[in-house]
Image (cartoon, rainbow over all chains, first blue to last red):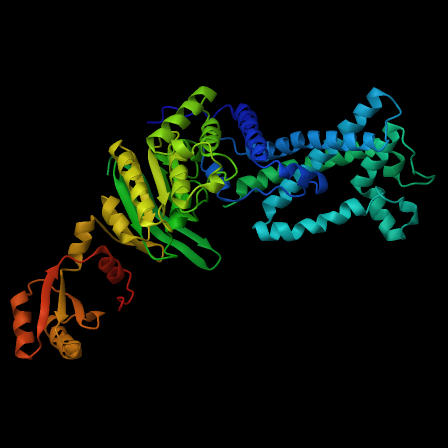
Length: 228
Length: 313
């Protein structure tokens, strides 16, 4: 009766293949509801909600389990690309431009995507640890200060000491400083700035790697154990 | 029980202080429909979740086609289908999009997944709605899509967890027809339901569970036979109800249940003759408009066995 029963030994292959299918799911969902794109542009994805009855079906199927978080973050990465394009387009319209040529500019975009990808794994993990939609919605505003408590809008020098420490070490500050440096835009990094702001490119890279090293295994483990 | 496709032995599962399963035993022969009945909180859904590898039991074991649901969960997942009271499909995709996506996740080739989606949509009468977003489907259509999604791989065993809860009678009938078709193809079905007529309609064997244990098993007829026939009496005068109840209870030794202001119903112990009761009523001067003997309904069996008070309407 199990004519199509798959062999279970090619775990990695199926993780990739099932992950691709799930990326397709997210993009297909987006096609049905393009308004989401706008929402994401204003409100970056903070939490990837991985529950609901569809998840029960995924768990009862002979598919690679780790494909689910990989598919979600993969789709989030791809969705980030047009968002980035819109952001760049808007920047060019208002007169922003990169000054240091193609390679540093590309590097800046890569760094942004890398950090975004790492942060989406944090979102997956948080999404897996909350019990339902209501809690998830209630948590979203708690993430907002992360973008505010940074050097994105104002330099950190003017902040009270404790706030300044948080802002200086916020990965959002690092990516802002790194982008400014790589684009050759006026940089606010003053003498005696905290280490992440003095070495923003390395800082973003390290932040991303550390976040991925922590949250990829945690998320996969949490997904495996959920419902047990 | 050589050809039992589902074997459950001594299953225990607790969630904190809630003991959902306390030694559940069950076997389902290949190619049959087993109906699992039980009041809310009896452990039906927990049992299905364990069998579908969604959670692990605290103690005991279960096998599907000989594969252990905990240690060989991958092999089990390749052989089961799960459809339930909540449609586990992606609301934002179309019906066809759902079937294609799940087909791919069942590792069918793209061609085969697309083909299978079309086959299922056609066979279960969803072609017309195939390209609409599921969010716009009626409850019955969603449930049907959920059901056929679980059929993509032609499972050995299909778990249906309250497949028609909350559906209107027409949609319920459609789901029943679909299930009958599957059974005709040889699929084994394990069905949980709160609707006893559903079990009566579909199930070959019934297991009644309460407090996480099986308290009775048998065919619907066998279960009905265990509590004896029912005697229904319709009185001409509603005010003779108490007198009639007293007479009937004295002669049968069973409690008479009011089924209306002028009618009552009682379980007859074996060997009772209708004529005796009619004569006793007559002697007490009680006029009966109708006295009839019938098989009990599964509802009555269920209420009796799960030890709840009979409903007085």
